[in-house]
Length: 153
Image (cartoon, rainbow, N blue to C red; front, side, top):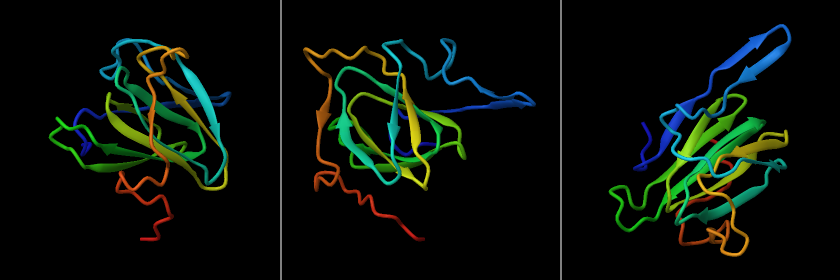
């Protein structure tokens, strides 16, 4: 159960056979689906951090289809019952999930391991270059209580 209010997780089920593998990422009849805006993929090199950003108008539905990433969420929403909560998800080939990140929740990710990661996002609104719904902080902002360094527990 996610710690941050409004986060939804969809377990992705691989269907392997002798030809390879098929994984459904998102369907219109999924509980996490509300509206299609667009779909895009991004490639992230090992150790690279892309953070922090949030949206005021759209939700993001993110998965990693190659490699592994540490997806980190921070709830900075003033009206949220989980304001101030931080949550990590390790997603990709070793943990096939799709994470729905609601409007207002800051998020970012870091590729972990030695392999390039490919992240797929299904935002609920199409990107508008004239008025981007992107609000950013630096990856090491003191406004977000998170350290991206490797944690050897």
